[in-house]
Length: 163
Picture: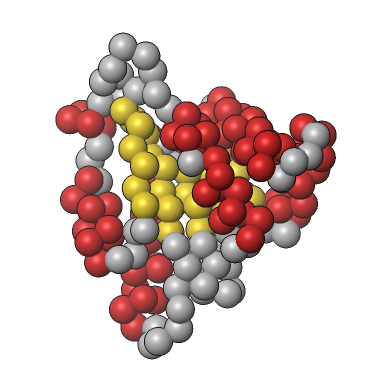
């Protein structure tokens, strides 16, 4: 179950390609509402990784996501359209490109990571996160996996996946 951190200043990394966008939209709607009605409390960054095959066919929430960006709720929007170039680009590829910043958010700012979508995508994202943690945390792959497992036990790394 996705639960926003109680400390509103903590960032949230959302990874929801395809229909996995549904709970991410709900999180952004909640964070938007809290920002608008919650007073002067500092709010953490909201970073979304979304992907689909083609922008013109599958990117049906573009207006809503762009609105979240304009109002300041969505800090970063990373888009992967897998069939719009010669080689396929998926959310895990975009996450890998942001490896140093992802590590900083996870380790230094105590970001929560929510992943929703297909089982294979979840495994690919898990693999990418382990690589990021291993490289930037300067630890073995086994220790990186253990680090990610600790995040999961703390409710900071949550996967909701289906086949």
